[in-house]
Image (tube, rainbow, N blue to C red; front, side, top):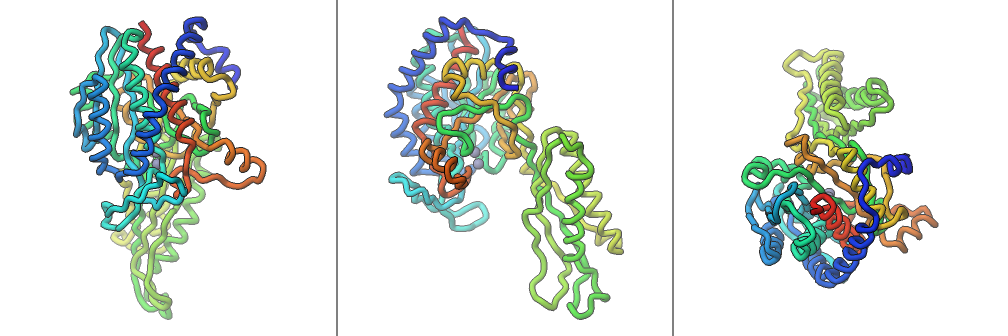
Length: 438
Ligand SMILES: [Zn+2]
Ligand SMILES: [Zn+2]
């Protein structure tokens, strides 16, 4: 599959000019790295939670301004839009997300975060860049720097955005709702990357077509009639009904979807009752529901509603006590990499980094709101790719011992930031230079 994709890649770039550009890119990235690593360590030590990225946004907006960008702050909350117009040509959007997570860092790094804060839910929490968005922002600055210093070699418009609240699935939506495509040049292309805890540091991973899933949070409120545990006949037990619903939900993916159509229905929380001998009068189920196409997403949501209600009827509940299904609004749509554009970028990355550092990888069931920039206008050629962050020694050890590596969001996630930042900066820089070639 991989080989065919490369051979049939329709868009070619003259190999002589490419070699020259690649060498140039490597040199520029190398020169920028000490400064970028200082910025990375600073960002890593000062993480901020979703929608509270005030200092992060301010700091990076200032740097972008110094690089010659026209910068607007406060777009969709703490979002930043930095525009660099450089003659005729297409418009390219490059996005990085800024938010950290309520996680207590346990990496043991010298520059580990010691930040604590109060979450939106009012809980005291530590804060950590456990999803590695600090590597995204650092590469974003690296890309901005390289392109602003190299204006003679490209023509077009660069719209670089720093997005808040990715982890809450609302930052992209908020920036778009605040006029991202009306107040600023609308992109023809959109690019982003995410560091990966499943790829060796410095390896680029990409997927053509759907690459990340539709993610829905669904609540099922199961009502019942409470009473004494010794008199079940006088009650309608919501725990028994909830358990039936959980069981029946397992047939949605296994019996109702095409086996080739990947989807997930997970009940992540089942809350009910207070004591051994009391039958509760309600239970609450919290689900995560994942799919790729809009049709499958709707099929799953309809199926969950049908099963919850149907099991309620089977239990003999009256209409007003039937389970209530609510789809939460923190939905993120599936990310889609436009196949022709993805092929073109994969070919470019392969020529820059060599075959051993570029891999076609399967789609994953994680979510990312980067998808919204494409869904707001499907003419935009959009691509999000992975940049591996697993340090080589850890990768080797895991291979030999079968030990599991920390995932994204883990308190132990410590990517080889230098490799991630250098690779991502070079990849983004060469992608933009290729798209906006004179
Ligand atoms: Zn994350
Ligand atoms: Zn992330």
